[in-house]
Image (cartoon, rainbow, N blue to C red; front, side, top):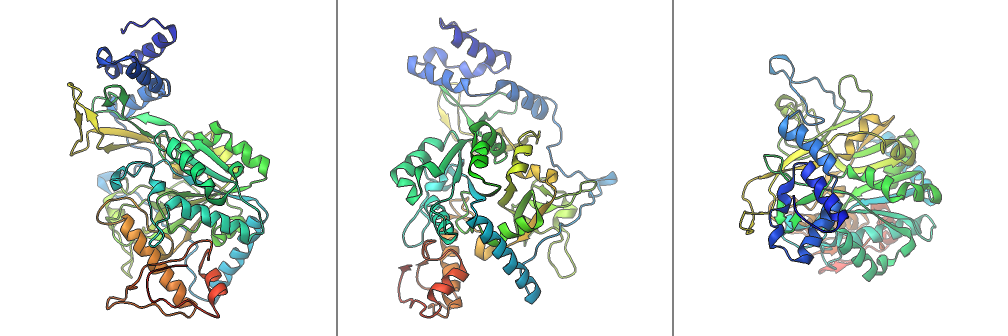
Length: 484
């Protein structure tokens, strides 16, 4: 056992040893006082009792991950059913349905009973950028960050409802909290009152190696990761956010991820369907086109009355590739990670034991000499809670289909699919469609792509309907890059 004079430090170190994680002090003798203090401060924040439970479950005595779809006898696939989905409007009846939902949603937002909640715990490491992902510049012309675009949507939604402002709940992580708070302060909350921005921070958990030992990212720092988007429930409870919602009269929450610039924040149609159904939870879905797309699927499970989400890595092969007669995948309701919740359900869900998921990941570490190593293959496990694991407990839960090209273009990778460049292109393409819908002309190349960068800011128009109302009599002329 390491010898220290401070009694509190001794107790902290003892907890680590009791959890079988003494290797985190491997370089203790090489650290100066500041390095030791930093390591002890991090150790104080870690729930080593929980870590020991997870190591026992997933490393020492591996069990199926929560939500894993297991085959039946002889390897047969488990019987699942596609969910009931509010499909995209395709006729007068469904267009009237959505128009009524839009009206109900606008009423609820104007009444101040709906609040946005942003999940912003992710870093931009995979994009090759240091810092929070939410600060990545994404505006095709202006270079506005993801979070600025969201902030402007919230300002516009409040103004449309005749409100001075709306409360905005922002979940950060240990890695993004300081950076996001500083960015909000520097930008003056992008025009939102400081008192209406409520920060809540999710917990971190250590990454472990194949032996269940916490990985060191540096001599005085344990490699950790946020506890998943399901950590939102703990953060809501621990931060006092739920009490704040009740104090403000918030009854419904619109939750969205920081990496999707096409997200229609506080979409009144989605809010309206949620309110009309008396739903406890709702989710937007996009059509999954190919079996290999890495998107979770909304399904119905045997002996469960509500909806569930199966991760792409957890569904069996037969269900993954099965197609309908028209060629579409039978299980195609891809989870877009855009949700609605009733506040009463969130209060109840905070008491649920959702169970952790374990995933193999590449984790930066140091070798026994203290030299930093960036592994080329997965070398560790990270533990996460999934928010959608609460869905089977929601009664009722709804699923609404959205058009991918209008509302879903996540920023996840530096190259290939789902990059910042593909998201910017999606923003340009959507802006071009709005202009043409309003009667304007957009120059296009031989492949049908707009030849100029076009950006329509949320303060100019929140959606196609608002754009047509504003510019219908005199649509803009596009003869170069333009930000409207």
